[in-house]
Length: 109
Image (cartoon, rainbow, N blue to C red; front, top):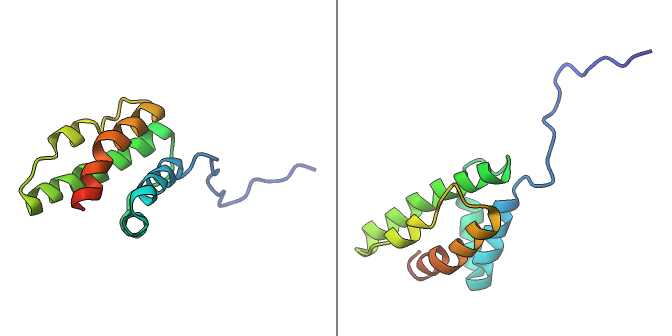
C-alpha cells in the first residue's frame, strides 16, 4: 500500500536556515550583547533560504540601517555599505562585515 502525500506538505527545513542571521547575532554579541539582542528582535526580513539569499536579505537590512545612521549622525557609511555585496561567498562576506560594517554599527547604532 502506498502512502498518499500530505494535503499540506510542510517546507523542508535546511540545516543552513537562519545561518547568516545567527552569525551576525554572534558577531554583534562579541562587541555588544545589547545591540545583538536589539538586532535579534528587530530583524524582520526572511531568515531562511540559501546562503546567497540570506546574505541578500542581510545586505538589504544593513544598507537601510547604515543609511539611517548617516542621517542621524551626519556621517558617511558609504565604505561600509559598499562591502555589503550579494556576490560574495559567506566567508568573504563575514570578513567584510566584521572588519568594515560592524565597527560602524557598533559605534553609531
